[in-house]
Length: 228
Image 1 (cartoon, rainbow, N blue to C red):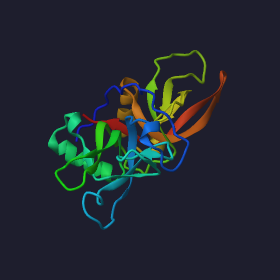
Image 2 (image 1 turned 120 degrees about the vertical axis):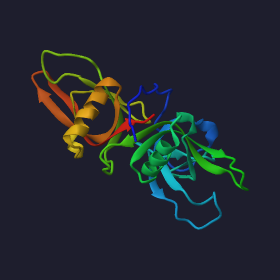
Image 3 (image 1 turned 180 degrees about the vertical axis):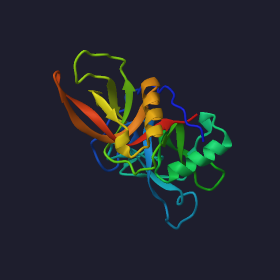
Image 4 (image 1 turned 90 degrees about the vertical axis):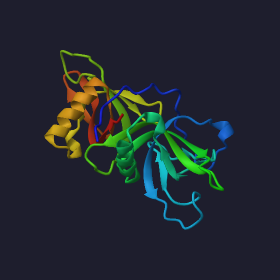
């Protein structure tokens, strides 16, 4: 499967919800968010009410489900990649990777009529990102881009980080993709893509110190490239 990085649309007001439990959709209209699979749905009941997977918004304790309520995780019976223009082989391979928890999807959960008695909880994708190493992601999830800034001292804000599904952002002095266990070729390609069009990265911060003071660096435990 060919994976290429593309420009990511600017967030249009995606907010972090700190409340738990169920919230009515009238208080929070559907927005395009980043999702990851949490587990397979092994429940025994009529399809499409059961079967498929459970998903959640990354960096958040609550997710808006297809029925409009907010829960810790939501049921997803189908993944709809039709809007991305992928070839059938790529769709099939990506769906398998996503179902195993190895990918991220930006989109929205919707109830879709599939010709059965009940509508299907469907994740309608606007972006698809595949993990490079296959490691289980940990820490926080961010979009990271190169700033193009050059400094005469260190640390320098070479990169800019936006935490997914939040309004949190900050400068970064360094990004260590090798910390994920990626091989040299994967790291080289990942850094080239980061500097060109950006990456999604799961990881943790470290403090980088130098003559200019202190700044965050990012230690990746998984990173994701966009497919199209």
